[in-house]
Length: 219
Image: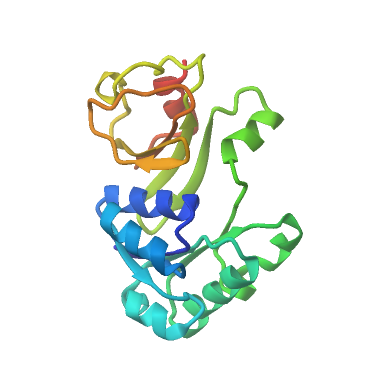
């Protein structure tokens, strides 16, 4: 599967890394040339400098063969324009878009080419923790065309996985850790990576639920 992710913020980087970990071809498009150059040396996905609102940039990113496009920029207007181009002009089968401001949620529908709208809170976990005491684990994305779910779990001082290496965590079948975000920086871990309090663990799975991931890392 070929995926395009637009916007190299935290959500964009995590999404790109998760899709790469799942074995897909990914192009990350970023309008900041310095950031694009730096990430090009750090990430396993292809990183393209350009404005994703420009159809020629999307074509350069491979939109004509894309199976999914994920618009994660920090600007709702840009995400809507990108989504509309992806669906109406390039007929991308699956479009996911980030909503930065809740008052704009009503716009993020199939009329603008959006299949799935996702929250763009600065910290997904901190927002959900305020609403429920058991919100250490949350599903971020369900990518139907890829057959995988992306689930995030936060390591706290109450987590059973705190202090363990990833090799010591019993993951469900068909599940892998794609990225660990530590102090705002995404890490691509191996089995010897030791989890610390405050780590946000991004998991890609074919069939696991949030409860399954919570059981592995939290209980």
